[in-house]
Image 1 (cartoon, rainbow, N blue to C red):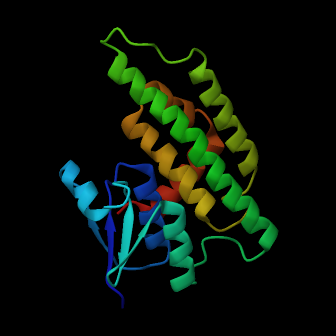
Image 2 (tube, rainbow, N blue to C red):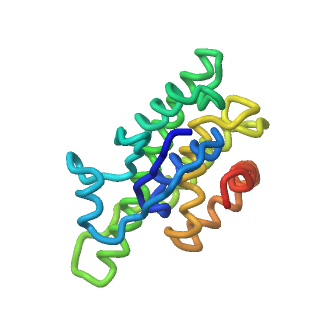
Length: 197
């Protein structure tokens, strides 16, 4: 069995996504969380960004590339559907979800940092837009247990990693925006049952 080490803070959605993929594939791994800014540079000298996955001494950066590498080295359980059209939809949703929710995440954090300073306030209407993006996700999911499939994929990992983090990092009001949408709440619960350990 290869030695696998995941470097990254588990509270970060991209790290959580990679951890979910490792669990889905039933690959044993060790997780190392950064304890200082120096850890980021030591583990990821080129970019200083985490997560990084090391397999038998070889490191891969960027969560999307990491998932590609996992599927290449360990094809079972696949992280996209075998049907190319469905796989393309899953990859597109992964990219869309990460771009959209990173945007709202950054604005939320900026609002916290700027709350006590004389700094520009976040753009108005972001909460409403966040709710609209959640409605979009619920529509993409439809009546299926997972996005575009009956099995979890990298799209599900991407969505779950952000929405799971909403409860922990973005406050009660935004967490309630997720829990008030039954399809997304059920989706999150299904994935949490698989991954929370």
